[in-house]
Length: 451
Picture (spheres, rainbow, N blue to C red):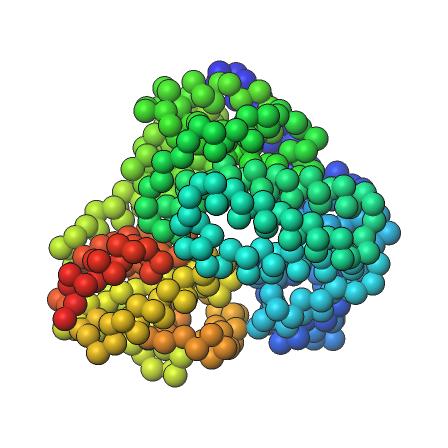
């Protein structure tokens, strides 16, 4: 096993050598450009090209890459794009409102305007988490089928090349299968409850070929699907040895590499299994000391944050609010504090906003304060202010001083968002990972506490 994985890790190093392909020209304007990097990356987040800004907001970019799906990134914002030989794209957007202002013009624009609208449409169709997820499994299957059909009709409305239609039809099928594969985890993520599903529910996944290297390289959602299937099987192992035995069944080196790299984030995202994932990293990446050392440090920080349990004094914070005033945890003495850690670029965070507003309305005048702390980077400050106004955000709105590197974030071991924290009137922790606003049990919890 070790020999096989060492070979895989060597292949990982080789995969960082970019294959030169077609030259793609991209230019455009970024209104309110704040100095963030504008880049194109693949789905391993390797930088393929970066923009050079001239005359303030105007930029140019040359990308020597293979035809395919990529990510266009501006700071933390990103959008799926498809680049093809001969494309000469013009890209315009407002840095403060990337998602809603993004426009593609020129050669290749139809494909990419479709991908932009596809993302927006998907978000709209799934925004009501109760209507979409909290349903019988047969209804959920109808929901994901409906999403696929709506997006297929959207694709038909764009004048795109035949090859891209074929690619997108396949992509939409993989997206549907991924939604089925992840239903139980999505249900828990958005609703905070476990759901038991029948064997029949997963029948459509039985025919998925887990060793299609061509699609693994060219279809992002096939990659996500395969990784999700293997990750679930690995996590079902009761101990490191059982997890390792599942890993031995992975035939594709590229899948293996992706899974091993994913163990790093699982140390913190699956805290109770953190030591198991660290042991797996040690077993399969023993020769890569920097990777092992980084994983050890991550485990150490995760375990330290896990020590912040009910009844312990909460770490403090002191940040600027949207009116320029300095607000600290001490300002809420005598009240419960329900803290929302979020960012303007975080789609799951945005989905929680309507539910958070309902909580604020329900407990208005009670002894609880709702505090939202943004972990946006400093250059996104104006975007944060605009979103507060546009979405009419209530409660206390604060801006973290160092994004995820803030002392408060580090103390709680926050590496992913959204994250919610509940603190009592004496500044002690009630729940370091409080239920989300969309969870029914959140109301049950708060009803039993606040007056």
